[in-house]
Amino acid sequence: MTRRILFFCMGNICRSPTADGVMRAKLKAAGLDIEVDSAGTHGYHVGAPPDERSQEHALKRGYDLSPLRARRLLARDFSDFDLVLAMDADNVAHARALCPPAQRHRLKLLLDYAPHLGRHHVPDPYYGGAAGFEEVLDLVEAACDGLLATLRPR
Image (cartoon, rainbow, N blue to C red; front, side, top):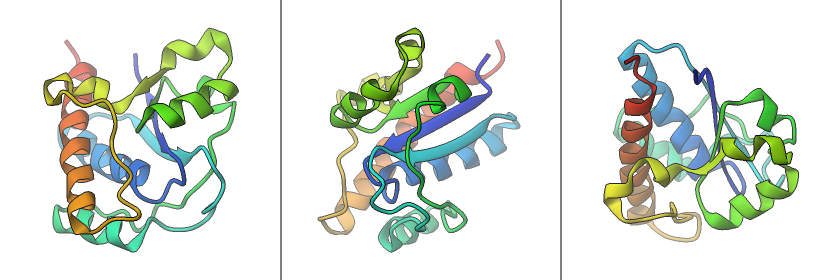
């Protein structure tokens, strides 16, 4: 049974904290007690809050990302979390180097939970404009809905 979920991207200031905040809200609304966290494959922003643009766009949809702080993905995350969900293939490649072979089944792409979108990667909005942050929210919400469906008691 899934009790802990970790989302990760490169810097842990845009995509993965967005997924963290969205999933926390969806789990709370569903009455499910599952721990959520987020991390980055690179340590550029350790200790920093999510990007202001991510926070702004998320808040417009009712998700408060302000308490979150960036941290780096650790090898122990693969034993501590039941699911370790990446935003894109580049970050899966970085994570695979840390992940013990016996725990590789925990490492997946977030958008695996939204196959109807026909997408595999949540694009990094960091260097773009508002539309990129909205697209991230759209993709993450759809994937979190799909993930939530797999977590509900049968």
